[in-house]
Amino acid sequence: MFRSLLANNARYLSSAFVAGEPAGPEVKTAIPGPRSLAMLAEMKTIQISDAVQLFADYSKSIGNYLYDVDGNILLDVYTQISSVPLGYNHPELLDVLQDKENIRTFINRPALGVFPGENYPQRVYNSLLRVAPKGHTEVTTMACGSCSNENAYKAIFVWYRRKQRGDAPYTPEEETSCVMNQSPGVSDLTLLSFKGAFHGRTFGTLITTHTKPVHKLDIPTMDWPIGTFPRYKYPLEDFVRENEEEDRRCLAEVEELFERYNKRGKNVAGVVIEPIQSEGGDHHASPAFFQQLQRIAKKNGAALLIDEVQTGGGTTGEFWCHDHFNLEHPVDIVTYSKKMLVGGYFSLPEFRPREGYRIFNTWMGEPSKVVLLEKVIDVIKRDKLIENVKVTGDILLNGLKAFGKRYPNLVKNVRGRGTFCAFDCDSMAKRDQLVEQLKVEGVQTGGAGPVAVRLRPSLVFQPHHAAIFLDRLEKALHKMDNKV
Ligand SMILES: Cc1ncc(COP(=O)(O)O)c(C=O)c1O
Image 1 (cartoon, helix red, strand yellow):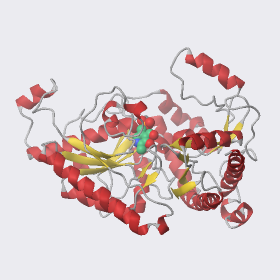
Image 2 (tube, protein in one colour):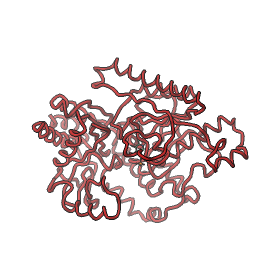
Image 3 (spheres, helix red, strand yellow):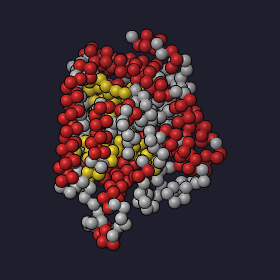
Image 4 (spheres, rainbow, N blue to C red):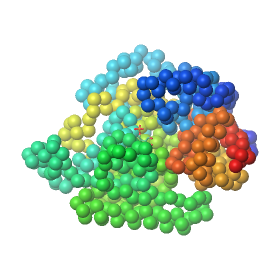
C-alpha cells in the first residue's frame, strides 16, 4: 500500500530535503539505554529530571533522525515537542553560523527593548514580518511560548482599560493603588479560556491552562471564565449534524459566560484559544466555530487571541493554522514560539500600549534566533515545504485511517491538518504502551491529553518518512494487538 503512495508523490521523493539521513531507524538497546540511564542518574543529583526520556547526541542527529547517546537512531515524529522546523543540523542553518557577520549576533545578547543592534529591525522584517498573519504589520518578540501569551494578555488588559477610560490619563489614585495590588489601579478584568486548553505554565498563563492537575496543584489562581471547546465525533463526515450541534452548544456557553462575568463587573476583555487544542489531546474545531467565536468577541468588545505556539510555522499545511478558518477579520493577537525559534506575538496597532516598559523584559527575544529564522523562512519558501506538508500529511492521514479499520481499539478518531495528526487509543494505558512500543520500533512520538498519540514531525518530513513511520506503526500495532 505504501509503495503506491510513494509512487504517486514522486516530486517529493526526487531528493531528500536534508542530505546525509540514514536509510531508516536503528534500535540497538532498550530506550533509555545504559548510557542514557547513567547520565540520568547523574542529572538527578542536580535537578528534577523525571520527564527525561533519553539523552540525545545532537552532533550526529540529522534531518528527521534523532540519535541518542547509546547509538540508537529514532525517526523523530515529535521533534522536541513540535519545535524543530527543518530537522536536525540542516546544512544551511549550520552555514549561518559560519558567516562572520552573524557570529557577533550570537555572542552579544542585547536587552532588545533598550539597545537593539543596528540591523535588528531589518532582520525582524525579513523573518517574522515576512510571514505575518493576514492584516498584521506589528510584532513583538519574547523568549518562549508562555511569556508570549503572558505579555499578550497584558496587552489585551491595557487595551481594554484604555477603551473603558475613554483615553483619559491615569489618576494619581490609580497610580498609588496599583503598586499595592489594590483597585482602582489594578483591574478586575478576565480572559475567557477553554476546558482542555494549554497556554503555558507561568503564573498568568496558568490561569488559562486546563489540561493536567500536575500543572496547577497548589498554585493560586483567578476565577476567570472557562468555556467548553468542542469535542467532535469522528469520522467528521458521518457526524455532521452532531458536530454542528456541538459547535452551537459551546458557542451558546461562551455567550452566557460573557453575560455572567460582565454582569458581575468582571468584564471579559478577551478570549484566548488554540486553533487545535494540542497538549489537551489534539481537539479540532470547525472554521464555522472560530468564525462565530470571533463575532461573539467583537460584539462584546473583547479581543480574540489565537495561540499558534504549537500550530504555527507551516505544520498544518498553512503557515498559520487559523488561515484554514476563513475568518471575517484579522485576528487581534496571534502568539507564536516553537517552530518560529523565538517567541512573541503579532498584534493589531490598537493593542500597542502608549507607554514604553508596559510590555518589556530584559531580553525580549533573542536576535540570533531571528537570524536563524530568516534562513528557515527562506528554505520553507524555496523548498515549498508547506506543499510538502500537505502531500505528506495526506499520506499520514490515509494510512492512519486504514489502521483505524484494522485496529479499532488502538487507532480511533483519526484527525489532522497537514502533518499535525493524531489518533486516540481506547485507554491511557494502551496509548502509553503504544508510544513505548513505537520507540522499540525506532520511532519517537508523543502523547497528548489522556488517550491521544500526536504526530509533530518537522517540515522536512517527506512521503518516504511517512511510509517508514506507517510501516513501523503497523509493526507496533500488530504486536500490541496480539497481546491484548
Ligand atoms: C499552544 C501552546 N501555548 C503555549 C505553550 C507554552 O510554550 P512554552 O513551553 O514555550 O512556554 C505551549 C507549549 O507546549 C503550547 O502548546
